[in-house]
Length: 358
Image 1 (cartoon, rainbow, N blue to C red):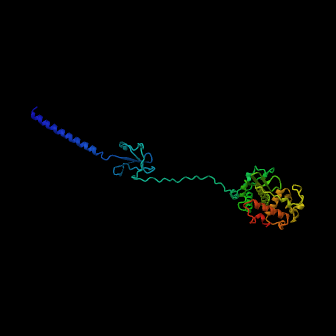
Image 2 (image 1 turned 45 degrees about the vertical axis):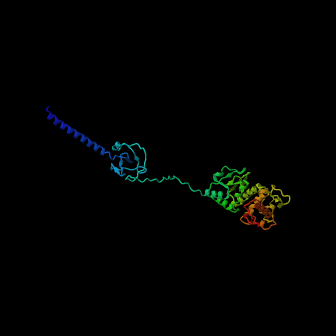
Image 3 (image 1 turned 90 degrees about the horizontal axis):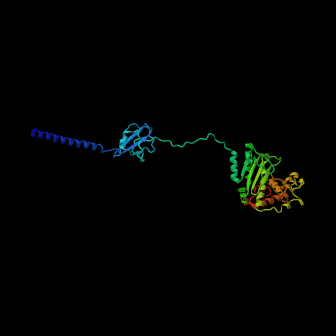
């Protein structure tokens, strides 16, 4: 080949080489420009499995949605920010692993309102209000005693006496009301003061005893006293009689003694013998009688408790009409002992049991 032809071919090849070089530089420039704004984060709000939003956030902070299917949003704070490789953007069914959780306020959707009102379970049955128990608890709190009735007394035996418990709610109610009325006649705090002698009182309301004509029983132990009252008989007379036994137990615990009691009795009288009806006010109606009834002649304790029963009666007996009468003198002596040993009793105040003698 001639030199002229070789020179022309060289020029063509040289020109093509320059063309290839410039083409390569241009293509390289286009490829680099495509990654000047890469994907930074992907925000996923997932509801149902087939409804997922995929959004991108660019450097300016504006959000660009790549899907128009919003679905149900059930994210706790409205969004969950995760970092994942760019290539996974094209596969929305693949849930990426969460690496961190960052609150994001740039999302355009509003999370659904979640009703967080607590569920209240309603009991299938409402217990009937027990008015008797409410009254019982009020009495116990007010006077510092315990009260039992109904099935609670079934196993109780008053000494050798058996009892028949109360089955009627109406009779229980009457017993509680009678008890509340009787307790209110004593000075405020009177029954709570027994605790200072380490004495505790329980009141048992029963229907009757298995032995006829027994109206009430005081079951005394060292520190615990049970007074049971039979509802088959008038309440207040039985209750005040038995309460006096409790009062005297307190006085004895405080080392009190009725040392001159027998001076108010007939000369040579002995308790426990066959009762002499001529000595009893209830038998003779004589105001100057020595005893209120035959039962008072059983022993000193029953004499004082029976006298206290008359002192707390609703009407005044004629045996209280003169300070010269033996029953008046006994009553005055008992009143003095109660005034002496009970802090809640004021000697300047005429108490309920004193109203017939002062």
